[in-house]
Length: 249
Image (cartoon, rainbow, N blue to C red; front, side, top):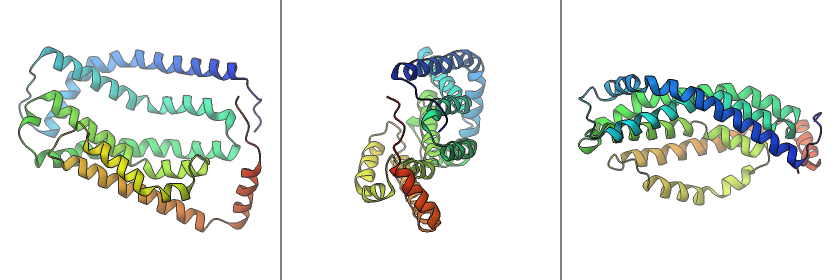
């Protein structure tokens, strides 16, 4: 790694500077999205239900627009947020790690967008077709549930990549993740079943199933990559692990 060592104070100053830039970008983009959010919300409502929309209080509508605007802002600014995170972490990465992250960031974002689009076009309408009643009496509750489902689905598509990165960067090894399957599933099940999203339990069960499928897929692909890794590459990785990683402190 060609970057020079930085002191703790320099790292903290750099972190503060990058967080400040991110907050400025959010504060500039959020009002623009908020201005257009009522039209976008009505469009989503027509796409999801095509029914009359009910709003029971002024605060419900305001809070819905604020939360929706913030979520949409974070989706749009996601590439910039990842860029700032990458630039902050760059001094502590090896050259091959930098190249790998540059390679996967754009496909990862594209997969995230695909997950959001698929959820709103297919998954959420399907789930709502199996439900009825109170979810459709409030625009805030209805779209809040829809956003929760879409976000979890989109994030779940990132799980195989997350599993690969955790092992590649020696954060959590493949064997550890494989051996901790049961506690991980148990924890996720508790979180899912206590989720505020309420569609007669259907969405929680599907979310748990999706997490399990994506996690197992990630372990499968990671296991295959390790099984067929070239011997020279295995030796290089072993030598790299024995090298002392650069301390940021």
